[in-house]
Amino acid sequence: MTTRIALFALIAVLFVPSALAQVANPRLVAVVGTNEAFVISLRDASGNLVTHLDPGTYDIAVSDRALSHNFHLKGPGVDNATSVEEQRDVTWTVTFTDGRFSYVCDVHATTMRGYFTVGTVPRTSFAASVGPKKKIALSPKLADVGPATITVNDRSRSDNFHLTGPGVNRKTGIAFRGRVTWNVTLRPGRYAYRSDKSKKLRGAFKVRFPA
Ligand SMILES: [Cu+2]
Image (cartoon, rainbow, N blue to C red; front, side):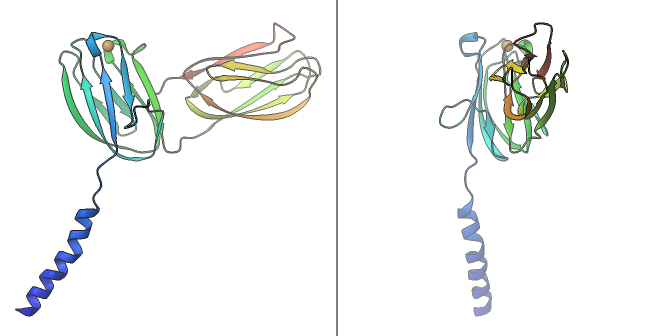
């Protein structure tokens, strides 16, 4: 009998602390279509738009306030959506692993959209060059959002390499020759590169919105 009580006490001691140790998941707030407006957002507990999250499990309070829009969250292992035709408040518990994620209104996916990265995402490497003759080059021509490293080999004394696009404006000197490395964060859209001395030396690449 004493043994049984002791065993029971031991089990209680072993299990109670783990129950107490359970912490609430971090909370995110998703809102779409307030007053039927074309607005969509995903914010953290402080009210900031989500751009990057640590991997883990989150509770997302989704407020679909419109009869003409919905909230659709997708990415590696995640695909949750509210319906377009109804207004609804719902909480999703979602586990995010490393990767690129997006949220859209499926009806207006090109304008009502946002994205964020989770954990560590692969860095895109670009090789770029200008010169020695009248020549400019960059590859690849298509990339994903997030961190990128651009290695520029400037082999011209009369041309430079100038890159512009969402959040980026970097250039080498016109007389400068040498190799430089730029670490940038790419956003969806078109990036253009050129020589500021020769109009014909130019090109572009595209950064795609997370699929
Ligand atoms: Cu919509």
